[in-house]
Image 1 (cartoon, helix red, strand yellow):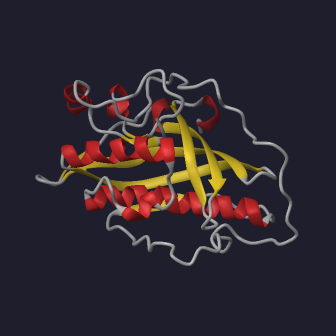
Image 2 (image 1 turned 180 degrees about the vertical axis):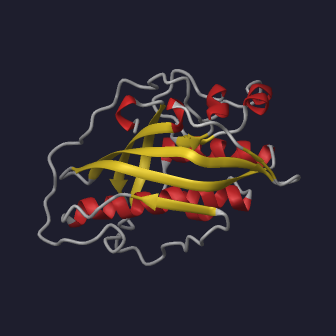
Image 3 (image 1 turned 135 degrees about the vertical axis):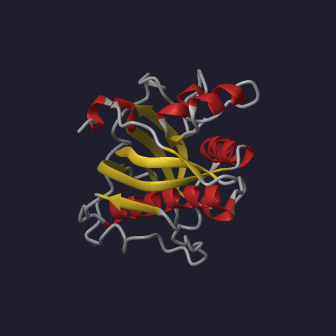
Length: 238
């Protein structure tokens, strides 16, 4: 499947034997256990590596003489969806400019892809167009299931997400890889019907490592094709 993030508690909802995992804030344990009978979702957990395919690079870097910041280095696509800000949800991306235009574009598009998935959860729409703009194939299918789990349980997200330690490589064939860490310690699940926030303790599992495989598509967007995540990643511990 594909990638994504959150809560110690949805660690039970993890696909087994698949090449990629959607991980991020997952739902609490009781909900997760009830859902496993019907969902093969995306949160990796228990600190187990979900794949041995953890290489940090994809071929030789494609160097560019043009430097740009991650925010300014977005691809040339003109139909890029607007990723609106979400109340009670904030991000810190410690992703400094690399000085390489292609790498910075990967960072910029990846930042937007993360926010787009969160926006789909806020919209309670597993087919929300903004995130589908950045995800293709296996990653899109896994991310759709991840979002649908939130929709099924009428759950949203709140808090602060911190992303750091990016390692990006761009190959001459139009593919790229990006590995990075996420601190979920101040991010929580929020149940929409009651406005109850499910706060969880910060543990080693609050620090998640990701590895994504991307390809520059016909629109000039660095689209995510595969995602692997590992909660409790040793490389991401503070």
